[in-house]
Structure formats: C-alpha cells, structure tokens
Length: 256
Image 1 (cartoon, rainbow, N blue to C red):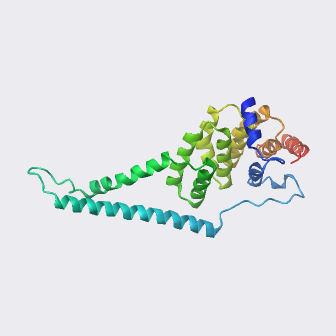
Image 2 (cartoon, rainbow, N blue to C red):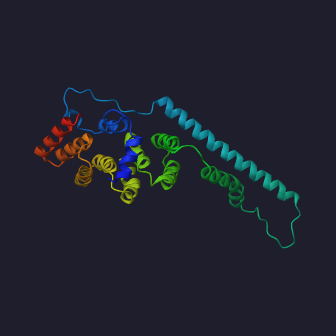
C-alpha cells in the first residue's frame, strides 16, 4: 500500500480497534463465529419492515408523479397540435402514441440528467440511498445509480472500500465481485481493499480465489486482524485445518 493511500485511510478511519464498518464484516462470516468461543455474536443490521415499506412507498410515489407528468405533457402536446393547421402532404406526427410519449418524456429525462450532473450531495449520503434501494429489491434503477457513483468516485479507495462493505451488509457479495473488483485492480495496491474483496469471494464460495486475494492483503499489511480471521475461515473451507488454527491464533494475538 502506497504511503499516500495509507495516509488517506488513516485520516478517514475511526479510532478504536478495527473500526465499525470492518467489524460488521466479521458478523457476516457464516460458519466462523465459533472461532472465538465466549464472544457474543454481533448483530447484523437489517432493514426493518417499516423502513423498507417507507422506502418502497417513496419510490412508488416518485414513479407515479413522473408518470402523471408525462401523461400531462402528452395531453398538452396533443392539444397544441390539434389547434395548429396541418400543412398539405404532411403526415400526422402524433399518429404513433409511443412516439408522442417518448417526446413528452424527454423534458423529464433531461431534467433527471441535469439533476444527476448537478447533484451536490456527498457521496456518503448518495451511497446510503443506493444501498437502501438495493436492499429493498429495486435492482435495475439502483444499479444504474451505483454505477454512476462508481464512475464519479472510482479513484477514491475509501469510497470503493465503503461501498464494498455496505454491499456485503445487504448480502450482495456478487456486486462486489462483479462491479468493484475491476475498479480495485485499477487502484494502487491496498490491503483493506483486498481484505474486503477476499471476504466477498469467500461469501460467494470461491474459496481458492479468496485465499489468493487475502494472502495478497497480508503481504501489503500483516497487522490487520480481520485478514487473519478471514484467512482462517477460508483455510477451513479448503480443509487446511492446521493453517486455519494458525490464522485464528494470530487474529486473537492482534486483539480480535
């Protein structure tokens, strides 16, 4: 990990231990919570039914408003055309309702694009909204917004790492592997990025790949206890019992 990236992480990291976001990853490791007997399992944050219902209601309300606006624009365009004399030989531009609806929708599509370009909300807030939508099952729209966020902030390792942790929190390791892994390869070597990618691969059952990525994380920084924990869990899945015990012991020595 380069000095610049390491310093960037230190500035953004919270004091005390491994930090709440990475500690949350620990809670998501199925089958590994028994590695340290006597420790209470930490709760996994899940969207409550009320919050999910609120998100869905707001999303449906926005969609209905857009639909009504497009219909109103269509009616206004039809009305204006009816009042205008038709030139001889000219075809009826409104004979195809789909064409009219597309034309009517253009002002709102342009407005949505302008809103996207000039959205001044911090990426943390926008990411939270995207993750909420992904958790609620609104994949197509949410994935478009996620890709836009990544296109804007792909050079920020803290943003990429936070996105990966949040996607794991809502049980989407597939998005980490599909959307974030290519971005991570373009960034300077970073132990924490490899650490969270290794966890995603573990969650997907790709244990050999997970081991490779986690060992690379260990080469970059051998002081992160979660890396040893994830390696221990991965080694167990690969039937490397002795190595797994060594990794768990080292994680415990580092204070996990």
